[in-house]
Length: 326
Image (cartoon, rainbow, N blue to C red; front, top):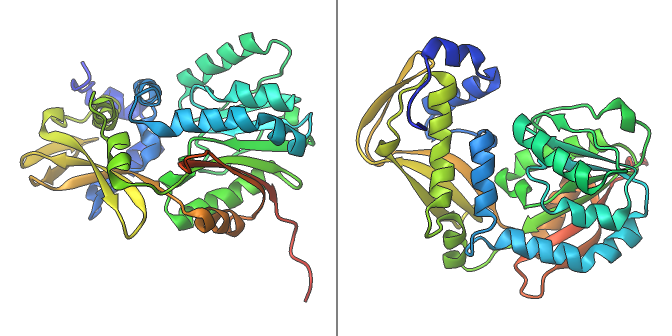
């Protein structure tokens, strides 16, 4: 059962030390917050794939349609033979559209969920039997090294889904700079960025009628129970989606329905009714904001495509040349 904690000693020993550290620090902080990257164990990854198929969740289908419509233009600018490096590959659902268009020399999917990564890589290998695929199990928000098989080859980073929107501006800039360093001189980046739109449409996308997003959010607590030997009562929390106009973002929270106490990895916590654990941000960008963010992160925009309704954008950028002059 999802809410049944594993043996504390075994779970704590087996847990990712970074996961343990982030959870303990986040629960002790005020306001309480846990990084969104920890949503993605196998169950979390499966739930997210369900979210992408929901009628309320426009980003995935809008981006996919835009990518399909602009694939030939993207290929013309990118050229053939680059290594495609996908950050946070998940199920790689949109990836075949890009691989078909740009004829890459290799594909490197990077994802934090190892089992999910291996499954999606195997599926792509069947679809593209002549394409070398080198999966990397890693947290792409931290420094990483690409496989030696692709060293010295020109690269195209692929970062769809507006995942960049999960990060506040300083962290997003840091990530874009890290991607530039990972991909190297002359690299390109194809990135999806969600656009600002009416609040009711945004709230519906992050609080669907079927409750899949709620299950996705609550699964984080289930993961903490399983991997950190915790005893968090899942029925004491509910999923909440809010619009923060000052920050231009949707926020996801887990709100306590009653005063509750629990242990995580041997440490005790108490949360009062109405208090929340902040679990995710999803920033939405205006026409200028997305370009400014990329420029601050070390990228120069080459092309910017938006769907006819103006809901979502895909941008192609190149690593900025080193500054010269006095």
